[in-house]
Amino acid sequence: MDGGAGFEEFVANRYGALVRTGYLLTGDRGLAEDLVQSALVGTLRGGSRLRDPEAYTRTVMYRLAIRWGRRRWRGEIATAEAPAVAGDDATTAVDDADAAMRCLAVLPPAQRAVLVLKYYEQRRETEIAELLGCSIGTVKSRAARALAALRAAGLVEDEKGVRHADA
Image 1: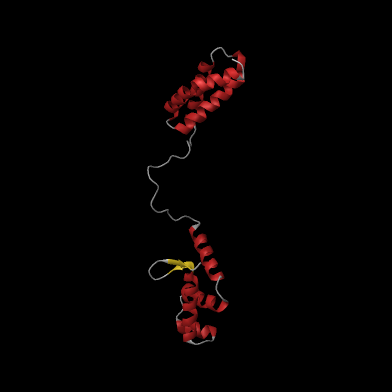
Image 2: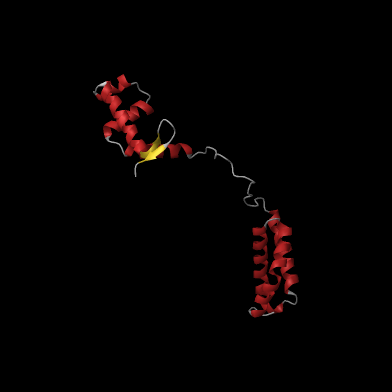
């Protein structure tokens, strides 16, 4: 078997059977194809000195399958169904902080300050008014305008849990 047409003919004729054997060895279609391709690389390198390319390819497949089976990590295994809700991980707090900063960045400084004092620092409206040197009515109107602007931009949900974006 030469490296050109003879090898291509061998692969065209025997690839399906080799993949079926690979599937039986690995239990996974993708790994079976990887196994066959790895073995075929060795067969191609062997070239004309191989008397029985299929026997050689299968021998390489068996040995590779055993070697691959000894690995501790066998790759990801898909589950039957994806989880309904992803669990929290270490990046959740960073993602939440980034989302909050993006929301606050679209607001004027006075509205931003009111929201930070009211929702982050959990201050009462009277305390906010004292800290900012304005009336309680001003605190209420700034908070309402800020939330309305965030809702209009689709950055926060309304009381019904719906996001609106005026586009």
